[in-house]
Length: 101
Image 1 (cartoon, rainbow, N blue to C red):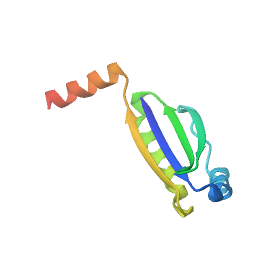
Image 2: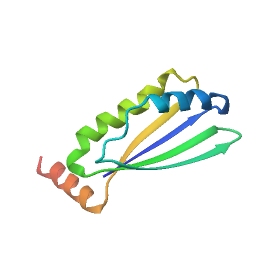
Image 3: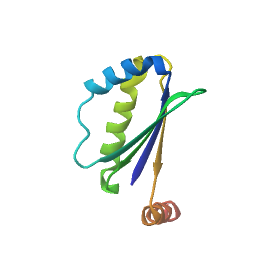
Image 4: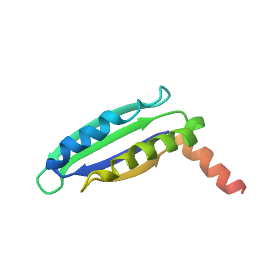
C-alpha cells in the first residue's frame, strides 16, 4: 500500500520546517519513503512524499504518518494532504470486503 503526502509551505518557513523535521523520530523500517520537492512562486515550497508499506501494516503506518504530518501544525502556512493509494490486488481485496458486507 502507498500513502502520498503532498505538503506546501511558504519559502520563508523552510528553516522552521527543517527544525520540525529534525525532531521527528525515524520512519519505521517497514515503511519506505521517496521524497520530491519543488519551489513554485505561487505556492511556495511543495513536497511530494511517497510512503510504501505492506497492507497488513496499514493501521500502524496510518498512525505514524498522521503523527508526522501533525508535527508541522506549529509552522505558519504549512498545509498537507494525505491520500492512501492501493495497487490492483489491494483494491480488489478492499472491494471484495465491501461487497461481502
